Length: 342
Image (cartoon, rainbow, N blue to C red; front, side):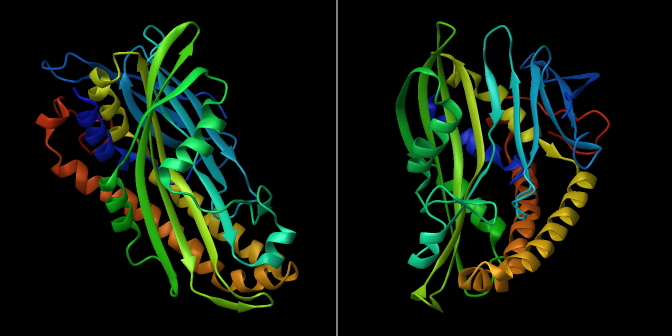
């Protein structure tokens, strides 16, 4: 399978990834399902229990039998819009192949010079890192790589490209949920890298979407200024030994498409976000003019994030139902104890 085919397959599959989540080890079901005679792939269900957070099963995913599930949810309660960040991995201990959901990154920016003097780049404002917005390819290279692959030996960028279908579906998911007077924009992209791990050369492709909402000009002490809230989301990394990445597209697509956030857990998560947001609004009234202006739209922003999450899940479901199984290269099968096909 060519790199272009790998990109297309995984771009469509990425809509199964949760928009903004982040501990005990995951449970692994004893039931296994076959990927069909055509693929000969034996899969099993991996579940993660959020024991240190909201309780109960937070997510589940299908992966090849024999692979190992690692990772968890990190709780960061000082960010009311994104108190949970997920970092999950499924890896093959024999070949070194790995699928990873990387933590989403949230940022804040403003053209208000007085505010930037108080909250310079690199500091935190309302739990979000203060940084100017970047395009997705620059963000993957300048933010994601140093933070998530900074210790890799011989790291080298092989290629970079846009992923417009990812951006289009992210925009569709956010349609109608942007606060009044704010503009929304999304850009999808990918990079391919290679590096050495324990003496073995690997290739890896990292996908992501940069999303931002920007206010219209707002009057303030520094004149008319704007506020930008942006994030890096849908961050999925697929790794394989050098020369085997494109041939592993089917298994990586299977994993991505099967990723599910538990609905009951997410309902509790929404309630927590609303509670934290309301408390944050009450606490930020004394921070300054910028905070007072932002607090007036904070509830709308929180609602936009939550509604966007739900729409992302719905968009994925529509794509999954219509996506050609022949293109995927695997047969249909049911998730054990669930009512949807993969």
